[in-house]
Image (cartoon, rainbow, N blue to C red; front, top):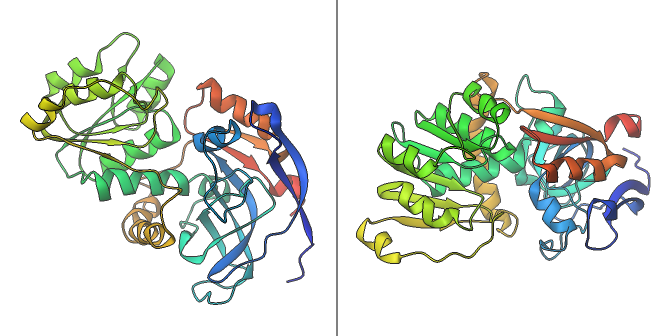
Length: 333
């Protein structure tokens, strides 16, 4: 396949607000060993993109400096050693960076086939959340059928995916949100909504018997409250700290009640670790999606050139579900 030498991309001109996202022309990435190059139709917008834009989340060594951690499209180039894919295959992928562009490269084992029946737009917003939720809720958190599960930020992309996965695993699910519309969306997914503006999630979980597992992206003063909301032998998993990474807690309660505190960040993990998560998704999560049991909620769509507006939407916290960039229509393919 003959490819152009350059592509349109959105780069971060300097750390700052959404206005620092500017359209640029970049060379098309070349695939390294075990890598594929994808002509992206859509890309997902995620909170780590916002952190990177602000100067708080540097790309790993060797990754593209362009934002964008997930996308979907067609494979157009194969690096040496690639055996899983052929040119022309449609895939969705977890990207090390570079998703805000017409083309992006990633490891062959971090791409997955588009789930049967799912459109490219929804598939583009699948991998970052699916990898994050499955690895932390199932692989790290060990959620089991019949357990009580609480996720904060229940109307976010992470939250809506976590609710659905937990429900399909047979757990009872609670989720926090900040207004009636978001709480209604949570309820529609089968979770019990807790409006944190007028209800104490610690009390709600304590009255239910305590959470076996909590997935937290807030941190700050939620950390001590999460510990109170756990039942004995409960697990608390951190994936972000929107409210700050520091808190004063009494660790005697952790020891006395045999609690487990853990967490992870996806992007710095090794290629092998991400490949192991991808294999889990293909075996366990993809059949749920293809059976219609799990869907991707799309909040809004923006043109690639309007990435700054997409970030404004993300930072407003008004979104329910995922935000995507439409690359295909503007590129004309």
